[in-house]
Image (cartoon, rainbow, N blue to C red; front, side, top):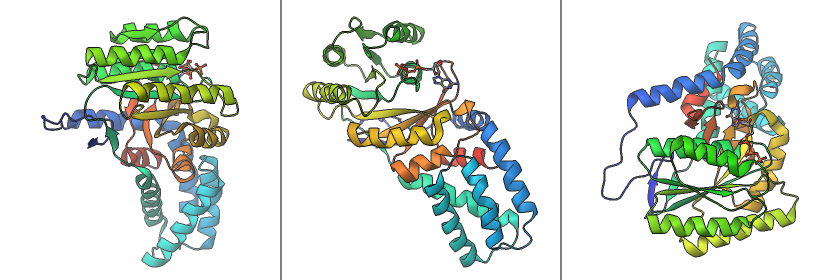
Amino acid sequence: MAFSLFGKRDKADQPEPQEPVEQKRGFFDRMKQAVTRTRESLSESIGSVIALTREVDESTFTGLEPVLLRADLGAPTTAIVLENLRQRALRTGIQGGGELKQLLKAELKQILDGVQRPIQHPDGPPEVIMMVGVNGTGKTTTTGKLAAMFTAEGRSVLLCAADTFRAAAIEQLEVWANRSGVPLIKTKQGGDPSAALYDACTAAKARNTDILIADTAGRLHTKSDLMKELDKMRRTAEKLVPGAPHQTLLVMDATTGQNGLQQARLFTEAARVTGIVLTKLDGTAKGGIVLAIATELKLPVVYAGVGEKIDDIIPFDSAAFIDSFID
Ligand SMILES: Nc1nc2c(ncn2[C@@H]2O[C@H](COP(=O)(O)OP(=O)(O)OP(=O)(O)O)[C@@H](O)[C@H]2O)c(=O)[nH]1
């Protein structure tokens, strides 16, 4: 197995390419842009708590609680953050609000870092990635964006239209495939998604394709026949490619907040999810859901969707997120 961060794949005989400084800067700026709404609302409310803070005491934490809840950290995560902050504040004997803000940032970053883990890539191609999730979260769009991103990084990509349920999904993916110039394996609407995946795995092996991404139909964890279908897809991939699917990415819509989290919790248990893609981060003031995902799902956010265009996806970086989240 080759290990690396941020979805970068290192070929055994090549030194791992460093992420260019400008590219990192670009990701940082785009993250900052994407969480503008969350930051603005948070900064204002944290600002007013801090303005009242001559000395950090219990009233400071009481003041912070609704602020974190409004940013959608959720009750359990907010309670953990405040308790840890209280302990840290006691230990370090901090005084003013400025120091408190730095401690809060450190606390939040630690939560995110705690669930980050290197992506385990297979020793040889193809790497199989399955996109799963409830309806309308952005699976097809994200599949298209990832295809473009990997292609731009010099990897060969094959797409599999395994969403044979939604009428327009195959055509939609075809449009994305054409945009980034990658081949697509599809079957007709209503066809067996596992059969499409079987063909795609066979083709990816024969063509020595680096990455195969399968877009699957939106489903609820409560639909047991559809969850079984996902399981069948997994088994089909595994039969043809050792260790496949190497990544199962749950696509979550950031704008659905705590409701989405509840669905995701049950989904991750059933579908062996390895990481989260958080879409529509650009459209919400509730970016704190990232922290709730870390504490409650114990899964890393691997990519963030920050718009509807083909390049509106960024590898998730906890430092960039926290710096963008709290000014
Ligand atoms: N603003 C914004 N919109 C997004 C993002 N990702 C996806 N969308 C939009 O979300 C809508 C749904 O996206 P799809 O990719 O069709 O969702 P899906 O999960 O494949 O849908 P089903 O197959 O029905 O489950 C589309 O209008 C996308 O343009 C994002 O990161 N930001």
